Image 1: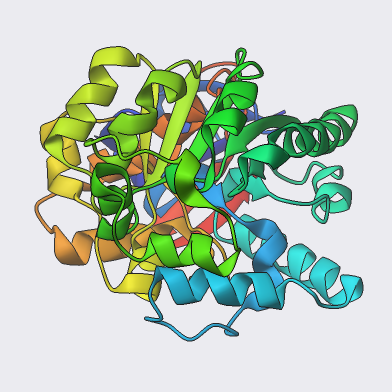
Image 2: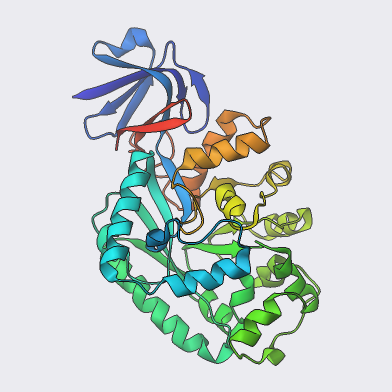
Length: 381
């Protein structure tokens, strides 16, 4: 038995084609069989208005923070946002689980089939073990105190192990350049292996100031935690270039947000990394600091762009098309075909899931999404 789909436009994962004479054919379980001319497709073709697309890949999310929806006011700035995140984690486990289930259901309804998910805890394990979506769990570590690095690694490896025992891909990753000491970087890099490594990158100008000159608001973060900063030496370089000698060891690397990334930063990464991906979460940038990532700069440097929603702590929805809408509002010149590549095949490659997801190629099972008026409907999981 086969399912046959036709719409005005057909996005293959790489190209946006006229659907007038193109029929997408899948097996009953959603496995792609072929794209054929109408004359060869036979009967029982389902006709739709809109665009047929592979399922979307959400390259950056914090599913475990879903219970924080609407709790943190918009436009607080990163420093205040992070402080509130810490305070709001301590809630009843039942509420956290209910929010995780609801958020996953919303992502599925919005055409998302795979998620790169930041995990500081095992709160999402039970839901991920159901395999409703394909997950890559990024077990996120940070240590403002270099003496804690060994303990942090051991705790992270235990969380990674439990995800993997439930057939959920997982890697241990750094939170951000400013929140990982050299001791922890050294220990982390020994476990990069063939994994994808994700990292929050250059969300504020203060992050670069901290590394270049050891000035700015991040000094206060260390003061509040009573950590002596004598161990930290200014590098004279941006935060990204400062940690690049270690981060470049990642088999695949996802740099997230990138609001204050320069051309020199991008060029430095591309000179040393073959599989670097740049994740845009524009609605989270708008929510926290009312900024936009340097989309045109990344395009001009031929960066591999992927799309993320971030979390309900920092967004109004978990919807990839909402992220593309925001990009389109600020950059109407970007072709839809290109943005859909970011949301599908690029994301699948970043998560090393492109063998099965991201494009309509024979043997893959990427999901089939109908896009109409910038809204998504999942036709086939």
